[in-house]
Image 1: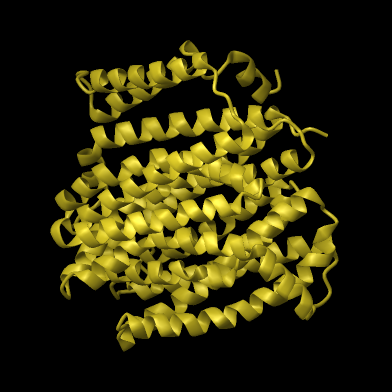
Image 2 (image 1 turned 45 degrees about the horizontal axis):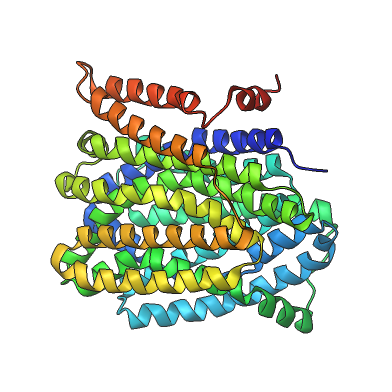
Length: 483
């Protein structure tokens, strides 16, 4: 049965709605408060070590999550066979990851105090990737409502625990960054257990199964996914590590903290695009596998991400000073400058989640890996050239160049692979809307209102213009609400 656009938008609305209730408070209420409490330098060290553990987290997965999601979406019966074996394999990969992180810590000259933060951060990566794998089984069965609930449980627990420590007056000691890390560990552990129970209920899991030929088969088949994850992590997460490594002691962690302040808002913006990909990957896999028409879903998701990225980048640049001053207490001017440039990356990143999901679902891993490898080269060269001169700002420039290169490459590959033809009227509508949104935003900036009022008027006008330029049709909105 064809998965309708109405069902797609309805599940997307639920997923985004739940996350918009929870994750913005986590990012702007909890994470910002933690950085203001511990200071730029301490948070910069945390951000650097977090990114170091993140770069190598593909060893915990080796592409099994994407492989599993795609396989279960095409054949739900595969869950019974795959789950006990893949779970055993992931536990073995956890041991390999621990050894690699030990070596990475030694190579990057981590001190004893650094390791006391690095070890629990590595455990958090293991638990976080385990949750994603368990959720891939849920979304692969197209149980998007259950997956939506699982996507916010960990953050909800973290919010409760952190709020008690930050505002509950339960201790006289200053807030420690280590507390923040251990709260995450507890929250991930509870969520992983809950997700495990959900999956076990549907696959009648009884015990782990050792099957070396199967392990080898899965690793060989999923290697392209693992390589893609590694390359993506490198060009997305090496910035803070390079800032600490290339700049003098003390300066590096401060610059990493400044970069983290700006990156946090970009990371928050990416949540919407990521949530879209959670639905798109199994959905595209299902449609392509059953030779059904995926183009209406592709068009809808493209419009959503194009408009989202355009408006967010535009308004963030116009109101960057107001936003950063509202959030932070330390190094506000430096963070504002970096944020104004870094947030532009949301535009290509959002579209990358659309076309990347399409190409992944189609199995076009060779093309994606070539793009990712080229992106790593672009990112590393740009960072090595720009960090010594511009520090955190140099990393922001490198990020924007890298993401722009990726989305252009993916759109070219997708067009050739699927022979996509874009109607000139649609292109004219997108171009016209872009120009109108820019003029509207600049005009509202001069209204005799508080900046919050200016922003509200501009957003409302830009949403209304979606109908004027026929990027969104009234019948699609009516279908979304079942009318």
